[in-house]
Length: 256
Image (cartoon, rainbow, N blue to C red):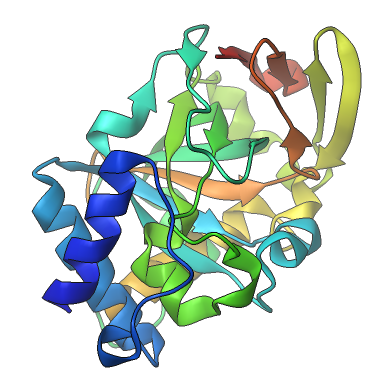
């Protein structure tokens, strides 16, 4: 696990890629993938700001060639402020994703009984519009499989969290809520909450149960990015992207 984590973290720091982890340290299961991911976070020396869910939409699953969602730690040094510029140096994905992000108000620790949607919503303090700019430490990330992608923090890289939405989000049917992505002032993609495992709240329950099984659960203060609700938007240096969540707010960034 340490050898795999050291290799991944060294490439993360350099902005370089590998074909895959060597067979001697390649994870063969989700359990091993999450153990390596935990070691990557420890080696980084940065705190964990929260979690992301990769591949909660059909488009997201096709993008990395998996058949279901994956959880990844968000490291504090990868958070950027809304409106600031994000570097695409060394990035092999070159996409921006619009995501519903929940901030936890209390812990959801490990337990034997699964969490349901009501359980997790009662632990949420706020909802935010968010942008994720994922990346991979694998040259051909669509070929390495779920366990190796989990080890590589589920393609985590930069993320931006917008202003807290007002309290009425709890009365909003998030599955039907529409989101529009603008690139350089032109519509680049449209989606809705149903593209995130049917509902972003369902995705939040999914990660609560995934971390109850493979980690130490969710903690108060964690932000959870629930996955892209529209097709990932291709971006290049010089582009400006705005994700419009309608009544729930908007967030934008530019790339260099």
